Image 1 (cartoon, rainbow, N blue to C red):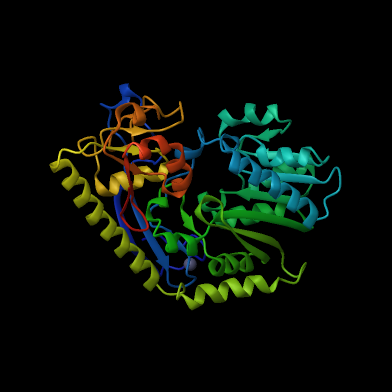
Image 2 (spheres, rainbow, N blue to C red):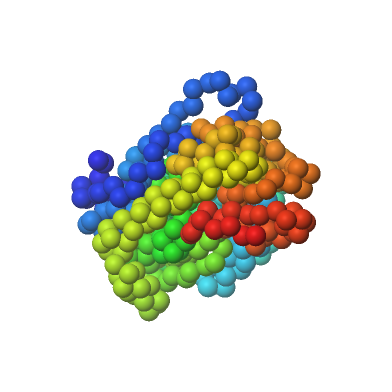
Length: 407
Ligand code: ZN
């Protein structure tokens, strides 16, 4: 067992084993079906020293992030969220025109475009070369690299120090945390601010969202281990907010130690986590037990429907669907096909389980008896998209937090 990626302690204990799975976003083209797919263990561990929840086995980032198909601006909700974040950062850090802002994991430049509009100098740091042209269209220059001490030193020599560094949905991807924070130290002005957003562990526990575990996410952050991590490297979490987007996120504002008195919200959130014993492994054993129960119940339901001759299909092919389908070993004999609105996924097959992905229109055209909701975090949006299916007698199966039939 490797040491904790946050505190380096060896007291790291696996509490959930989701089996061996392929990378969650490696949807297969038809001509790739006969090839051997690399699979990696997907086991989640708890550090008894600092409380950080993390993957027991880390896949090296280039296998996942050198080419990236998830585009921020593809979701209107996410685009609006990022532009609103730019506004909040500008106000809170009193940004002036010409102040320098860096976004790590800049994707298609959506967040930084919010700063371009108000005259700040911006630079995206983004390892996926396929995204840079999209950012350029928004007037956002991109440095094609992974952020860390070496990149930050190089960027400082060329561009000077930054007033603000942002990272949304990126911090959980970083295995080399000390090097990342050393990079912040290289590039941030003395009173500079780092703002991060990451899925939040309390929300994951509440939703029993075990399927949001996949190799891209090597960390599952709570406030307490995060605050301890930054404190060990001369920084301080000075404020936190809980956000509803992406089924529950944590936004943290981080500065060098002593620059700003932390908000009482930080201590309050840490106290919340301690109240539910997140400094112990108990709530995580409970999560693993829920995942196992969902596996038993959903498998039994699908077997029963199959025995009755019912047709069952899936709706939505998100990355987390890969974890759910792999963990339950659901293949095309139980889920005929999965409908997805993204043309990039249609015509492809789910990683590992090889279920074909088809156009969303197939649901209404063929009226299967049941639709399994794999993108369950958008249940309301999907059920309303499929109102005609439901009105005609179609039924939905929701897998988490409980297996439930929505008739
Ligand atoms: Zn630790």
